[in-house]
Each structure stands twice: as structure tokens, then as C-alpha cells.
Amino acid sequence: MGCRFSIVNISSAIFHCSAPDLASCPDESLPEFAFIGRSNVGKSSLLNYLAGKNGLARVSPTPGFTKLINFFTMSKTWRLVDLPGYGHAHLARKDRAEFNQAVIEYLQHRPNLHCVFSLIDSGLSPQQIDLEFVEWLANNHIPFVLVFTKTDKVNPAEVQANIAAFKEHISEWCEKLPEIFTCSADSKHGRGALLGVVTEVLSSVQAEQGEEIEQSPSEEIVEEPSEPPQDAEVSSEDFLKIRQDSSGRDTRGKRPKLLRPW
Ligand code: GDP
Image (cartoon, rainbow, N blue to C red; front, side):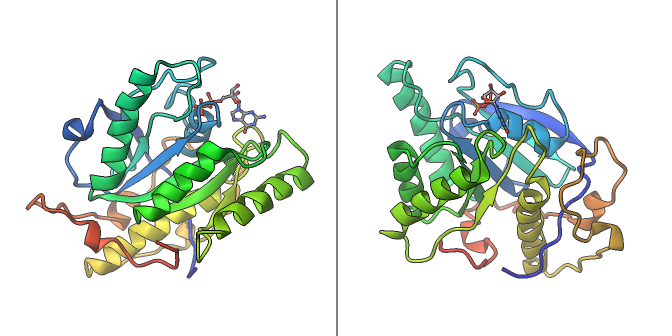
């Protein structure tokens, strides 16, 4: 992994739209970063923490509430995509199949999808459904990182043991392990590193477009701010101008080449 610097400020986080299927997704003008995990993994809490906005994603006591693909425009330069969770035991099989299909189509065919943040509960030993999903991502050459959530919930040794066990499982079929991150929305840990992934990708996209990146000192590494900034005045809008592929053709091949196993 090369130089890491993080978008320390998200100047705006605005709900764009909800889509029930791939055809209803918005235009492909901005790079997208999708978040997905088993129901109750802590996705909504994490998205709110990342965005520094409590009302961004709904934190629901009812698993499976979010059935749509939700798009949020961040700092006018990238989209955060909240994908429906998988593994809702109480939902009818028909419903499950329906929104799994939307997610599958989005993941397989969205040309401006740059990275999937695959969320795993750090308090649990490897779950079959998570292992299968991660294997599916890898088999489909979909760029992803693993994010172990709720690290505050169990002791650090248990977190490490669960991560090690997960790695051992996937190493059976994964030649090179994906990048692994830990986070806790409750204890406010992990934001800097996760946004660092976004920044790295956006920088690569811009570099591939042959544009100059003007990096000010304030955009250099800042790990773990105590509170996510809200509505801060930043120049990230100018910092990362992402050009639209007006032809509308598949730009998946234009993804930046990163040191990840996909
Ligand atoms: P989602 O279904 O994946 O969107 O998960 P939610 O964000 O709604 O969270 C599910 C449950 O886990 C809720 O009771 C949250 O309060 C709790 N939770 C979420 N994140 C954390 C965390 O970082 N630490 C702890 N201890 N609990 C969390």
C-alpha cells in the first residue's frame, strides 16, 4: 500500500436517492464506495460515524429494514452506497432473493463502483454467510476490503482471534489477503483509515485522468479525530474533480490498480 492520506473533512453528506434495482441507480458520474454486511453488523452506525451525521443512515433495531440501495453524495465528489444487508433469518425467501438480486447486479455491473467495504462483526467467530459472500466478491473480481466492526464490544484478544480465524478460512482460496480494517462506531475508532481508502482510490482515479492533485498540508494524515467533522469548509470539492464518462459505457476497466488481491 502506498502513501495514505485521509479526507479529514467531509464538507457535505447528502442523500441522493434510493434504488430498488440496478436500472434505477443514479448516473455514473461519481466514484462509488459501497458498504454491506450481515444484518445487525453495525453498518448504519458506521455510516453515520463516517459521515459525521447521525441521521444519515437509519440505525434500526429491526434487522432488514433497509431493502433499497441508498446513495449519498459526499463532499460533492464521491458516493457512499448503503447496500441492503444480507442474512435476514426472519424474512421470507422471496424477499431475500429479490433484494439479493439487486445487490448482486449492482456489485457485478456498476462501472463506477470502486470499492466494497465488507463488514464483519468482530465479536463473532467466522460466519458461513460472511465467508461465502467474501468468496463471491473475490470470485467476481469485485474490489473489496474487510472491515471488522464493533471492536469495543469484546476484548481485543477476542477481536484478534476472530480476525485471525476469518483470515485462515479465506486464505484457503484467497492467494493474497484483502486489506483488513477494524472499527467501532461506539468508541469512534477506524474512521481515518476507512476514509483513507476512499482518498487513495479517488487520488488514483484523478491521477489516471491526468489531473494534478493539489494537496494542502491540512489534507495529510490525520488518524482518529475525536469527533467527525460536520459541514466543515474544505477544498475537497476542488481537490478531487471527477469527470463524468459521458459515453455511459463500462468504465470498470479504468479502476485504479491498487495493491489488493482483485
Ligand atoms: P445494521 O443493521 O448493520 O445497520 O446495524 P446498526 O447500525 O443498526 O446496529 C445494530 C446494533 O448494533 C444496534 O443496537 C447498535 O447500537 C449496535 N452497534 C452498532 N455499532 C456498534 C459499535 O461500534 N459498538 C457496539 N458496542 N454496538 C454497536
